[in-house]
Length: 95
Length: 474
Image 1: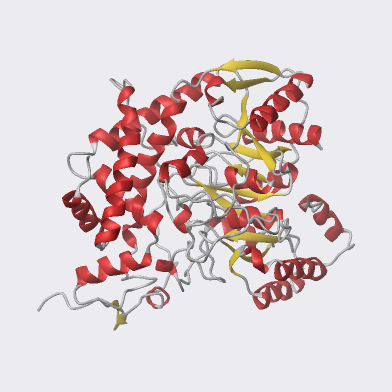
Image 2: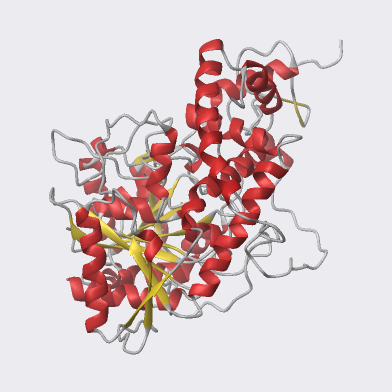
């Protein structure tokens, strides 16, 4: 078994997702069965094969370095759950 | 089956046989009659009427003027909220318009609403949406069927004739599979043909937008409208976009079709093997040379996909943190608590599952064994297609391993659900264009789809083969 209680807690923490005990158990089961299933890729000989990270063969295009205003901070902040004096607001970080 | 056609409607509008208002009121009526299908996450009659008013005061000639189009709720729209079918984006009002919806607006189309999907496009039945299931319009009264997914709302909107076309996105089959389930046409173009600017990202190396329509001609008209280079998407391709519709040619004489032997999979229903054979016979009659080809790494496509897609999703979905937009949990004693509770409460089960698996395969010590390995196998899968296309002009396969399944069918086993994409995922990994067209029915009279795959940026060949098969079937 690749994923145990410790591993799932670690991944959940890295993902910033709180899991309760029941969820942890379910995900341990799901993730193990998915990881067992993808194990079959080890049958494939990939020696000297270049990884394919992006299918578009085009070289990243460059654009003119000109500024443009597409969004105003006011508009953007309208979607924020909380904002203060033109900034996003979050719970107090420093005591 | 609906007799609507975008091509005919454009003619009727042009000759004043029907007005923009009459046309859209007809659609509004049908949308309201079909509310039980739960096709739309956002629908407002008032909003549509306002669009009609604006167009009536607009004297300029526009290619899609007055045409009712449904938009998958993964595309950012300024005039309508955008949720990605997730609680975490409940009440999100984009401050900008996606590239594709802007193009459709520039051409004068009317957005009838935002369609339902699997949460963040993760699913194959439109059953992971925070806003409930969409029902396949072809369902019998006592047995609701799934519309497929993730773009199930858009496929259903076309099938129920609630619009003349709809946008979708396809990461591993999310346009082609629901098109097959709902008996409509769905095209996923080459990766890079349409800009992803303003589309909520799922797996960036795979995501591609496309079109649902009533027939192949309509799809060719609409795809031309949404394709094109955009400097805000660095994977957007600088290629000339042909006039697919004008260039449609159903004469396939002398062409070669590839039939991949690896797509004959044990357990595929007889009826699906049968329509595949039927399609091959039709092509043969049209003078197409049949070439048996091999795509040897086909069986590894699904496990490859289910490493790469969740890995990229875990990274893309990191932005939903309760700070900048969308939902924030009430339980926020500290910053970390806020993140963890917001994401725990804001994401659904399937999305969390994929974020967790993606985080695992990217985490220190496992990256090479999973993600890098998957990228290498992906290269071999792409090579398979490159080799095959040296011997054929296009490839024909079934679209999905089944017809639409019952909505209530238990989907507890994630791997069983993932198998829905067995015929669509390989082309996604290779970035190839693919279309699904309705071609035959199963014993319950449900539609089955045939998939046509083409070379990179050879959408024209895909359309030509599709229109040829479609015309022979009608």
